[in-house]
Length: 171
Image 1 (tube, rainbow, N blue to C red):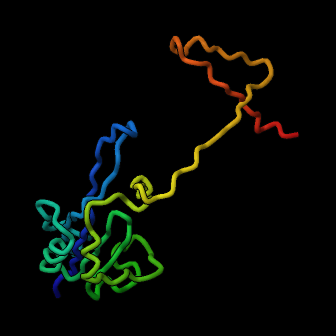
Image 2 (cartoon, one colour; image 1 turned 45 degrees about the vertical axis):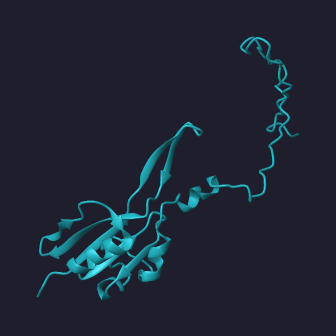
Image 3 (cartoon, helix red, strand yellow; image 1 turned 90 degrees about the vertical axis):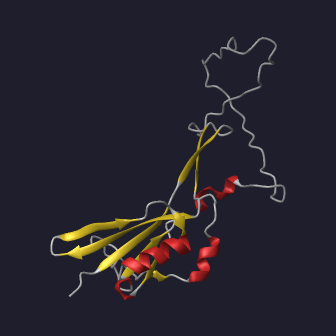
């Protein structure tokens, strides 16, 4: 009997310096890495790996040629399976007990895997058609007895009109 093999296809990530945000931005390039694991008597053995990330359809084709089942995880942490070996709960990871089987992969999903931000960061892609973000206004009043040193302000800069409200003393 041939040992069961599963190919793992996962979306790559790119981190890019964002000078406007003074940090890095995470991007999903729509390219996928893949490797094959074979279950034998001694546990899972890491087999062949892709040499470079490929578009999802090509990575899946590579994986299907080499494994009984294909586990797909995109950068938004959605999971899909191809093959009867992955239709059982927990099939992709024997250490976890999944409540449900993986969603079946559909080839038409491949068109959506283009360079994009992760789902939880797509708010950064605001354009002219989006409604404006309302400005935040706060009234701040320092507690009694505090002194404010304005000497650190650059010469010619007007002193801000700041009052710090004490939100913890609402009695």
